[in-house]
Image (spheres, rainbow, N blue to C red):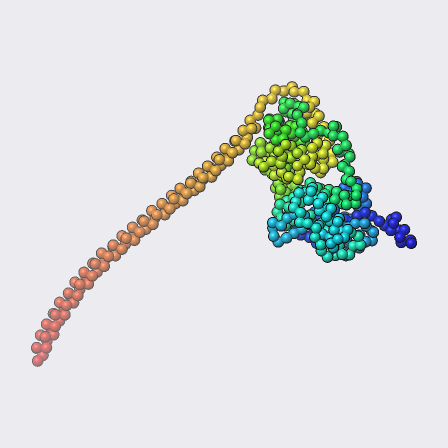
Amino acid sequence: MIKHYMEMNFGMIDLVLDAGHGGRDPGAIGPTGLQEKECNLYIAKKCEEILKKQGITVQQTRADDSYIGLSERAKIANDANSKYFISIHINSADIQTANGTEVYSLVKGGEGEKLAQRILSSMVNEINLSSRGVKFANFAVLRETNMPAILIETCFISNVNEERLLREDSFKDKVALSISKGFLDYIGISYKEDVSVTDDDSKLTPLIAPSQASKDQGKQWAKNNGGTELFISLADLYWSMYSAHGNINPTIAYAQAALETGYGKFGGSIDESFKNPTGIKSTSARDDSADSYVRFKSWKDGVSAHLDHLALYAGADGYPIENTTDPRHFAYLNGKVKYVEELSGNWSASQDYGLKLLKLINDIEGVTVVDKFEDSNIYEDSIIEEKSEEKETIKAVKDKLLTFSEEIDNLKTKYQEFSSVINDLDKMISYKDSENERLLKENGELMDKVKQYGEVIDDILNIINTRAR
Ligand SMILES: [Zn+2]
């Protein structure tokens, strides 16, 4: 009786989340080294954050990078008297093309299968990866838990594309949201949007809107705030390019470039030479070192990438687009952020990012233009860039030719040296030849003489012999 009372009133929680692997067990590892255990923990924590806001009580089997055995995980859920158990994993396969989402339960026909089905369809719906269906397996965490339990294989870390997605926090956020929504749907609670942000859209500042400030107001504001010459001239690009990039309000984009670069002074990991006005990172980025940031060919490319990323966020007409310099133009981001206020926690992890930006936007709109600004030649920057690239190629070819002709000269000199040596040898040989001839002749003469002397000696001997008889 007492036990029952305890369970009903104190022990019971709604859900135990189990971030797979941890500590000395990294789980699967992606082609560029991303570890499964980190992704699992991130998603599990995000699920907890989302579900708690919806009034669900949640406990984690691990809240940090520690190692926990499989049976221990099941025991935590059993001891907590949890109503449900969800284990979060990332799949891996030897076949690099393997992809998509699958969810496991212990047996066919139970509550676990229903929960798995509901969460799988919510996930496929939100994150748009292919569905591999609900599967059944005798996993320890499914077998040893006393409540309906499932194990999610989010996607394949062994797949290059899906590993790249897993590096994006915004993707993992979406995974967590889809799991949470599926769970809420299963227990019959409807998901309530975060009221703090989207309660009253009319007070928010949309990314797609006509600019309230002129280009010269942008330039005057940048100048008043100590912006670099280059940064002031970037206004020419923003105010001329926005209409071809989803009609993003150029004042917002320009203010963001100022916030990200310190009005063109940079000073963080990258400098002006990256031509990257908002610190866009490459898809293989691992940290905040300069290597993680994109180096654009021209300022036009850098500003294009910035505007395209905002237009994608805002769900502009025709977005996502095929040809963009934006390296993180992922379809799942489409329409994710429609207002400046929502950039907090999306473009930047910082929660007051949107508010900081709003202040800058207000400042630009209130500036009085007192200086006279000429159009800069920053448009030509890309042409100059291409030409200088051509020049560099020509220069490289010239350098090679020069090296070649030097080598040919060297060969000529060597050839000349050789021929004079050969000449000398020839001379020596012909001298030797004439010597030989002379010696042969001398030899012949000597032989003749020897013959003559021999005859004389013979004569003398004859005479002596004759006398002696
Ligand atoms: Zn795993």
